Length: 323
Image 1: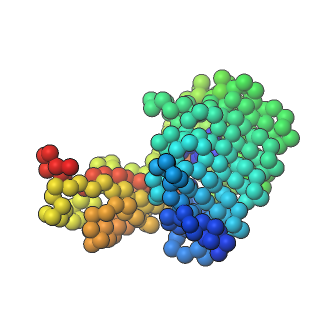
Image 2 (image 1 turned 90 degrees about the vertical axis):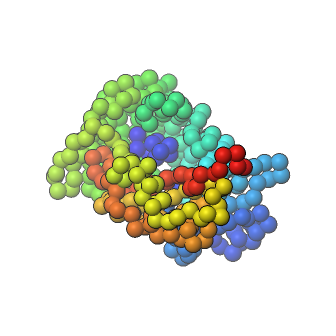
Image 3 (image 1 turned 45 degrees about the horizontal axis):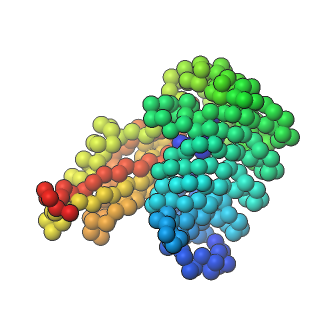
């Protein structure tokens, strides 16, 4: 389920010239989602274009360093994107990797995953019901191997996922009625970690992982988000204590988005503030993010991992009746 959940759960001069007439902004990223300031440090480039006539959606196009498209979609926001409608991702060889549909940034409807050779890997159905777990929100309709032989049919069979770079199996397990059921096995070879997860009727029950040194860890939650002591509300309070909201803006509120990375030790880095209070306060907020006390790191299969996180809030309280 790790690749499926990850899909759920983000130039050359020729590119720049092609986009020049419509490009609003250009961003540079590493493959792990970290934004970098220079193209020489980037694994891929994101170009954000202005909405087409009659639309309010920005065009989002990611490019590999070889100028081939990595992803194309539409978004209601610039950075980070909130995808709307169909988005298509591509392998570096130009073949489609996935075709997915979004509404307000959430996956909906039918999605398709492909192999680097262009053949269909899996057909998925996404459910936006808020009360369901991430695993329950995805229904595996079908799965094929690289030769198009059926592995899952009508939601039943054995799902197999591959490392698309090496061709090795990265995860596999039984599927019943479209959901994981029974023992799933997988691993992270670069980290020398293997894991076994137990599902019952699509719900995660428990799991354990074994590290390269032979240490075994058990867990009852497959994934956990990074957490500030006291939660996001406490983090927002910490940020707001770092500055005084300008009296000149007392009748106005400002919505801001704070994005950052939390590494496996809990240290915060790459903080960004997406908002517009004043240049000075924007800088103070960014500094405060990067100076944050350590968080509890995100957990995957019982082990801490590096992760990105976003916290949004409203700064200032408009006077009653103010617009």
